[in-house]
Length: 124
Image (cartoon, rainbow, N blue to C red; front, side, top):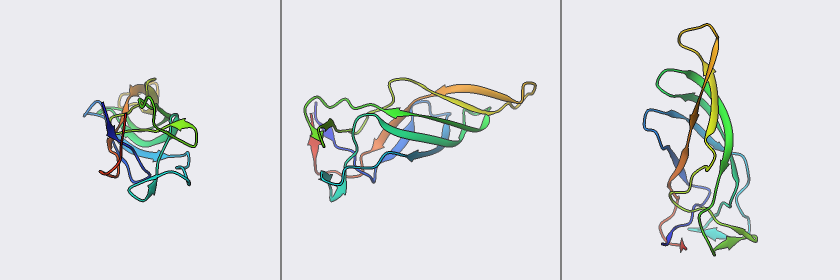
């Protein structure tokens, strides 16, 4: 099934709607391959989550990678990310425990590409 390719204008959501936080991409988009006039992102895109919460734990941080589900489309020799792609390994978030001790606690989260940033180019 073809989905829109994710570019540098993409937005994210958390698979669990109770989770929140700010997702920042730390790997650069392709400078050679573009969709919607903006560079596309590729498999194993590194992200950092800050100010995370699971509805109880607050000020949590964590990092992980978003994995590609595309089977053929590539940018710079690497499979591209598409709408709906997410991290295959849950991201461990560490933040403030609302009922210490201990002062910190953890939870896991999954981040999904919600809006790919463009609606012209699809990939299978």
